[in-house]
Amino acid sequence: MYEFDISIYFHYYINNMVKMSKKTILEYPVIFNKAEEGGYNVSFPDFPGCVTFGKNFEEAEENAKEILELWIKELRANKQRIPISKSRPIISEIPVAVFTKS
Image (tube, rainbow, N blue to C red; front, side, top):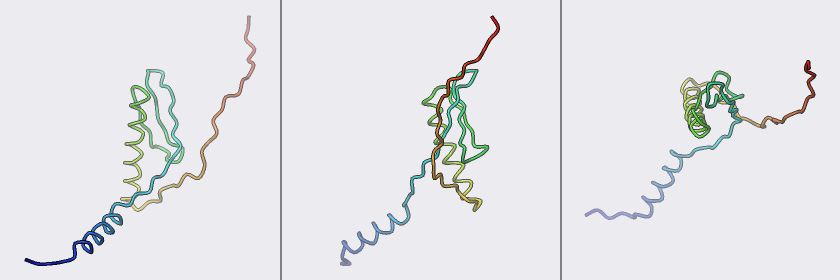
C-alpha cells in the first residue's frame, strides 16, 4: 500500500477547488414594470436588449436572474466587456397638478 500525507493532498485539493470555483457576485439595477396584459416586464439599464417577463413578481424575479446570468455568460463566451454597475438609479415619484376640462 502507498503511504502519503493526506493533509498535503487535501490542502492542494481545497486550494485548487477554491481557484476553480471562485465567483464574484455582481449586482445590477433591474426594472419591473407592470404589463397591461398582467404580469411584469423586466429590463436592465446596464444591458440594453436584455429583457424578460413574468406572470407574477416572483416569476419575473426568477426569470430576471436567469436571463441576466445567461446574458453575461454569452458576453463572456464572445470575449465582450461585462459592465460593472457602479451606481443605482434613483427612482421617485413627483406629484404634478393636471388641469382637466369639467
